[in-house]
Length: 127
Image 1 (cartoon, rainbow, N blue to C red):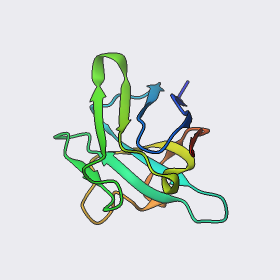
Image 2 (image 1 turned 120 degrees about the vertical axis):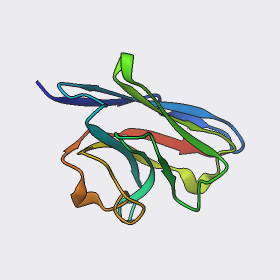
Image 3 (image 1 turned 135 degrees about the vertical axis):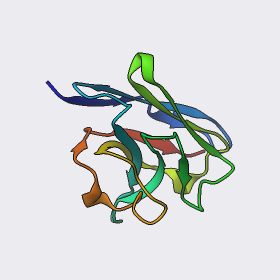
Image 4 (image 1 turned 90 degrees about the vertical axis):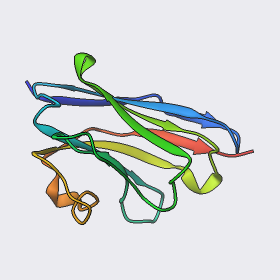
């Protein structure tokens, strides 16, 4: 049974760090690219970062470059999003999604490219 479960969210002060985990079951990270998206209240869901299945190429939104790092542990079927230097504008529900095959520079942040989604984990950054 295919399942995507995010965890690691919480409340943190500005400048703090969190590590989100995305555990996938029923599919292999060898064949699925994983993306992280977020949705803040009243805003559209946006792509944050992604890692391609084929060669592990990583992608980041400009707003998180240099602060967030995506990685994967295929043995644990888990993709991580390390978030450092968090800002209040990072507050959102963070979603993990799986896309069969590789992803591209143009397509990694396109939601409809992804086949499966998790339920999300809340991240709140406030003083």
